[in-house]
Amino acid sequence: AIAGAPLTAPAMALGDPAGLGPLALENRGAAPVEVTLGATAAPVEPPPAGGTAYTIRRSYFTPEGLPVDPSRLAQGSRLVAVLEVAPLGEGGGRLIVTDPLPAGFEIDNPNLVSAGEIAGLDWLGGLEGAEMAEFRQDRFSAAVTWDSADPFRLAYRLRAVTPGQFSHPAATVEDMYRPERRGWTGAGNVEITR
Image (cartoon, rainbow, N blue to C red; front, top):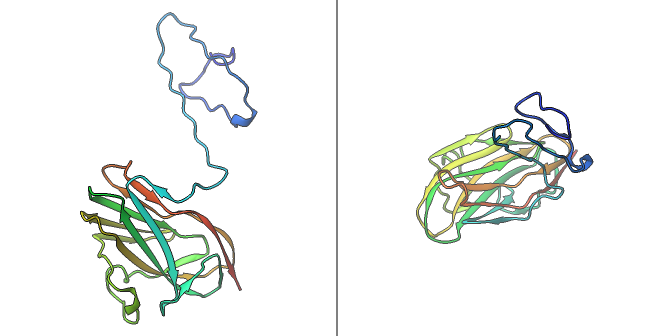
């Protein structure tokens, strides 16, 4: 029983924890009962950039190579997103790099990471080839096997298409088989003007 009322289902949602006081949980049977409590929540403020085994940095540039602040852009602006991942030590791994797009953006040319169309982007220098790259409606993802202590870079093209104010989620890097080895950028906000 919870708060004196018998449980009628194996799982129970208790609602908003802000409105809950202390709850008594009791076993009214003769045999021991295993109980699992779980809680989920979203942080009030996004966590700052950090990492346990990697750092990841996200930068935006014009197609000509000039740095761009993505917090305020005009509709129709074309950008090149550059993700730089640096290991914090030795170890290597099979990595997934994910960059969620703010609403209002869309990926412009999925061929850049696979070295399809990089004409005019010589300023990028050496980019790492991804073993797999996905260009989804809401994110860019790439798989990279990396055994070096040196950093690597990935890039893709995107465009500001929808006016409005949007959240800019953090980009992440994570070892596929050791998820405790990861890194993330800070989050922010984006405004696309007409």
